[in-house]
Image (cartoon, rainbow, N blue to C red; front, side, top):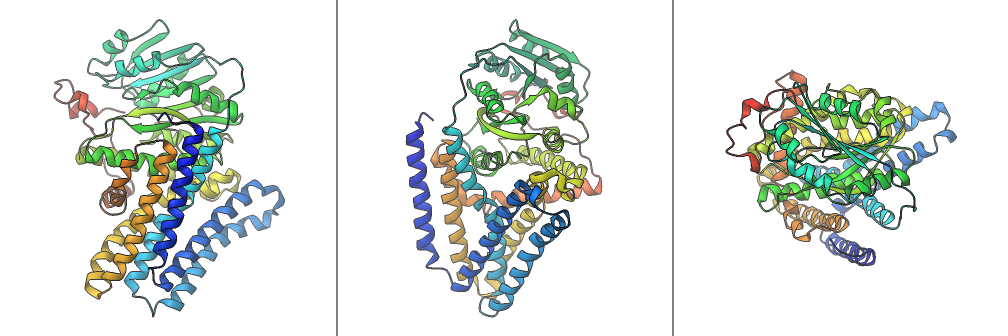
Length: 500
């Protein structure tokens, strides 16, 4: 991580150059018709993205009668163009190859537009320095439920943080049945308050902490996470950089790497989560301030009534509420390390909760789709989340099915060429994202599984989550076993069933 600004910038330029060269060389092997589809679709995506930003940033110049027309255009124009392209080339290229290309294109445009923005954000953030002035006091909220063997480590990391002003800590034990409360007391400093309340869910614990806090700036940290020593400085600095910000997102990294499952998650966080936060930071519409680490203005929290328990993902829900209230939300370099599930079973249960909660939040705030008053949240933020929770998983299944069909209709060789093109692109984009984060480039070796394997696993879990939400199935929090608590007699599935 210890690379200087100049070193990082040079390495990024080298990676970008390699991407351009590799892309150009590989294009020569693609059929001309397939290349035409790729170019047209990419231009359409760029047109939509750029148009949405312009419409939002120059809304005062657009007559009201044209605002809805512009929204309709962004839908009809791509659809019409795709139909025209298909009508002209479908006879020359096998249908499975065309569908395969469109499916992969849709997935990759999702990233093509985001990674370059993340690069711009990284370079801008590197070149900004906080003015010399007094640092404000903070209150760190730590909600905890059955976090024995974790909460002490979390509190030690907060106490060791390099922050030059007063830091109060409020730990709220939300009805734990293990030794969380005792462990929190053992690791408490003179500025730490530890309270215990009946189990009411994470949102209830955070609201209790909010009531006890006295500072204008608040930071929330999950009890099973550990913050980097510079994390608090990074979060607060972003409030100075963005005076209209109601909240600042932390940079979440997987700390327990070393296995195939956890390394895949580490790469996913870098490419699929943190990269998007960086991109949307430029626009002030970061859509999730993670529960692992986030900072808030008290005013912003109170303006939306604090934390809600209406969904399984209170962090996503709260973020959308703050954006709807008119605040901007940005991202920071403040790092927090979380423990990723170490087995496929536990990863499955974790993602069920995430996906179900995200879907619930989309449904709860469905009016954002039709109300242009919400600006970039309406035109970009929510549509991107919607695509990631709807079309992308379906396309992932389609890609896998088309590979099987290609063996039947004889187009397998062409599909292999197209697939190789996208695997290369995914690999290069992963390397770029890893360089942006200053991470271990060896993680890029897992990039092909982002297309085939890991993606399909997540797609299936997401589709099940959609079915669960709309069929009204059991949506309670499911047990996710963690390394430090395996074998503990006080930690079992029944203890994880209360509100979380």
